[in-house]
Length: 233
Length: 227
Image (cartoon, rainbow over all chains, first blue to last red; front, side):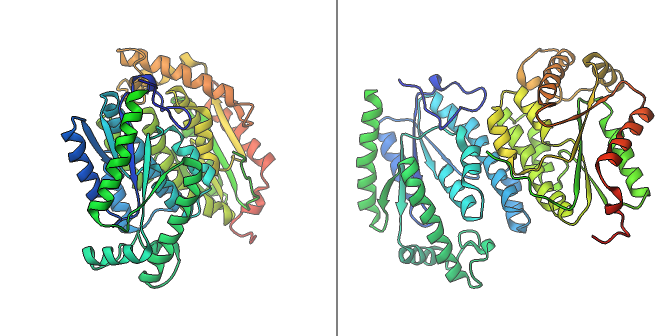
């Protein structure tokens, strides 16, 4: 078992040599199919005898309720929102991800620091600032970015909700007065940040315009490789 | 990370020091003085943003906080007050008074094991005050003032999360001692104006007011003076 790597230092009190599990991240915009695929992966991994923990953004006990309230009122400056999300992330990291890794689980993370960083950078945060904030995050064994064309994204969003989400449309960013064009512009900007980050962080970009079974088979094949690589270490 | 310190019309004055050092009394008196003279002045204190207060209270009560989330939640509070109040007021030409500033986090959170470089990067958006008064008191005196007047110590305030001692008073002593060391290490780097906090409140206030008058052209901040 090799020690868990961190981007810089681990958070105080976390001993990397005690973390034995495998962290796998699924990234991608809303309606890219993240949660569907995570559900399928979870069942499949458990069938194979892996203990699985599912984590995601904005689910922590500490600030989730306050974050939701603040977003409803739209009263936070971008920097305050960044730090709120970072608090939430580290709360989950220390209370869910780290204990699960310590217990040797496969941790499936529904998005990770990259979404948080991309959102912040699109809203004008200095990339160096956000990178430093999230530098205590563990380096995942694999990151799969579900890349979806704008057209597919719009289709899927309208099929499931019949309306666009305020934040996923970047309506706070002043990109346009109508939701539809703002949504397209905002999603393009986020995608551009992911492309930049892909070079720095080495994601697997996965074509998510495909059917659920096709993408599922692809992801499982890739994760199988990750797990056998980890077990050889 | 390099710190951009752009010129702003306003002035920023901060007070720092251990619990019991008398800093809040001193900044309160400064606030009263500047208000009564008709200056544009605004006062803000650490950990007071209404938005973040609920989460902080909950986290502290249930002892949910780790050194990292403790630090981040205070940074969130600070960012909210900084961007909503302090920075706009500094741009508008106010004198902004802060009871505790980023140095409180640098001292306390580093004592809790947070990385110094991480802390400084995180607060990289905050400008260094024009004047930072540091109220220096021998540890035993500061401890005496707190332990005598308010024996009900709180969990995080006493650094109980660090497991320094099962006894809360003993934990408080050790924790405050380490926080003081951190402050003293920063004093030169950030140009603290070090105050002898063993002097009487009135004596100290005279020194504080004269330092402010020497370093800030107060006339520019009078409500009648249009910038």
